[in-house]
Length: 454
Image (tube, rainbow, N blue to C red):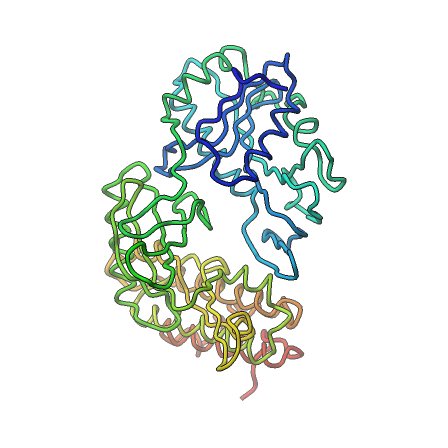
């Protein structure tokens, strides 16, 4: 067991399962080894993100940031989405390993800035620690890399966190910490602002979830509840200030004004723009108590969709995109992660039943707002073509397994080669493409890339 003078718990644990998970690692690390560990702390990344770290371990095997997952049940993946089933209820989430890698990348950059030119800082490696040995884990492909289980009792489907990660020598020389660095690490952590975790952060009168539900290099998404009014939850996006808080504030203001202008059922509704020490904040209106990204919706409910529902989902996204292009706005970053799903239960149905026919709204308009603010001209042909290809790619994901994927991918270029299509305005091009994609969703046997005879 690593002694307490080389193991620091910076913040008391809030949930009872977390200290138990940490104790298993503390017990497994050797007493006479050179390891040092810091548990449950926050740091400010150079991007402006305020990150919480479950565990950082430094030793001969490298510098490891562990994101701890105490969830129980059966875990599997569909691509990069994790699906956890417990008591017959399945929930989707982003990969815990992917979250750890983002934090590890930001911690590496912060430590290297603090160290300066005269001290070599190894790359921090981000991994997921699934602490419940009773969980059944069936992760396949890239999703299985960087995921570890407890040492005792061992989970046969996972490598062991201490034996196979923390005690194993680093194979990459760039990840091997030197003695000077290990001596300097406590001072470097203080220099980058290591401090206790705020378990329930707030924005104004809204209380956020303890951890973000989505994390990118540019923002962190939370679910929030009002501490004053009995309101439905709100989706809160906290933007990282980056190298310039002023420029970030200006770009988020552009996004806010753009979304106020794009008033359409297929586009997210923004409520307010707030300011917070961690960065500017957009707060989005949520009509239902459940809100999922489209990639999560597809992982959970795709088998339930009829051809008519798939066609309607494509039409919803196409209508929102066409509305933006009619106002000379190109999205520029449309994916299934940039579309939010809302359940639409019929009268007498439960909210879960409403996922059989979800409502969809395009989000992530930051790139579009910045591009629109930089020029008063309409989007160029390249920007329009990108949105068309992205729309086809999203439609292909919606219809995966039910329509010819090759036809979806080829359709935008095939249409662009038609003289009549090239003369259409961008919004009409989006509508024409949407019509063809929705038609293919209704008739999976018909290749949408084959020209329609008139």
